[in-house]
Image (cartoon, rainbow over all chains, first blue to last red; front, top):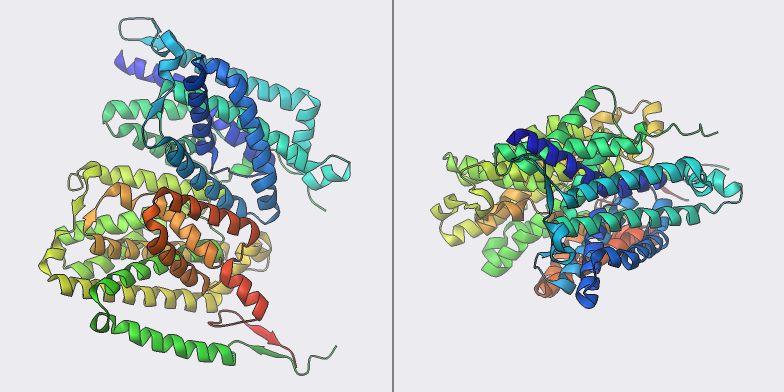
Length: 299
Length: 330
């Protein structure tokens, strides 16, 4: 029974990982950039919410109304200040520059907030510990269920926007070929900026839930980047729902690992990631890009 | 247009003179422990470690086009295997070299896997590897989790002897590794990996063996970083997994290679010296110093991707240690 419980908790954790990963996955899909500051930006959002709660004594859910637009702005600025220039400088530069952003962000957060672990848990009242008891050994925390539902809604919403709306079509076209989009009178840089802003809203949401369900500190961004990355590699970038499956596989693996040994949580997660990588390697030359829709053939 | 009067050269007058100066400098450094104070000797050993790390990271990123944010995996494993071998009774300095070679052997199959990844995927994949190795090393009872352990074998030497021997070890490894990089770059491998970096598909289409060149650089970087990790352990004595497998190493390596000049031979050496000086002057400011490092990496990657040396080299046409060929007009 305990084992079943671990799996259920792992699935719920997977919902969080999917939410965490969708910003990273979306940005890679549109701009072909793996944003190494992804985790640090989620932690930034969590600290901004903490500030909001401390100053106003209001719920962090209300704070999201303020913090998510701020994160969108951060995405916009990031695109014009860093990513745009990096993209034009070749494939290596985005890796270098976003790592630079991560180092600056982590250490600035440390300078501003100190080394202490923080949590938004105390600010959300009963939601932090209420749960539905299904049996004696299996219970589902309401917060975890909320996170999972949010992940499904965000992924579904993103799918809908990309498939059905005008901006979604523009984003898909830009992802396919920015120079052609420029030719027909769409500013690809503006499309990238909108995409970066959307990605940062997702990052902000993930950061908020990270802060509510767990504690965080200024250097917590790195591990979160790894979880998000592992999620999209395990799930594959083919569809947004792959992200959810990737998150669930990672979450379940980590929870099963935790039952084996106290260090098993992280080791099992990383090993699962490597196993998927090996499987893909022997199944042909693996690259995330291969999982994306085929590009139009360049002349 | 007539080609008369044009000459293809490798060694220019400048570079011959410069190589001579380097030779003299190396001889002075080789007798370092006899002429420098204990403090200077220690600090130079640290500088050698930085130069090795910067050169290895540059070999991977600047020449093979593989940006890794997980090279600390090799530093940590180099330290770990040195502890294991030294505990097994092998004397310190041979154990250090052996540990680096073991890491190189491990890097062969690991490279097969990681080199399938591209760009940012490779970068983060390496970090995952570093974290995984960190946790696995923590499981070793000798290491006692994050508590770590000490390189007790160093107590067999008198402090002055240990200081001088570690210095020579670091110096010899630095010279050997730089020489290997220099020779590799001038040979067939150098031409092929730079072709791969600039355009992998084009390189493959003219018959360059894409995988071979990258594999060599990957294993070289593994051996080099492991050696640096071993020397680092010999200077600090205590092996704490969180420090050896820490991501801060990547921030340092990236800073040194980027600031000095990615994809140039001399650049990482200059970057390591700049980093060394920055650390001596501002290291005490702690976090502010790390913010500065990150900002510098960001600014250089966006505005001066060729770094200090690449910019100087282009502007003044300087060729100090030539790894390429140059066309000289009549």
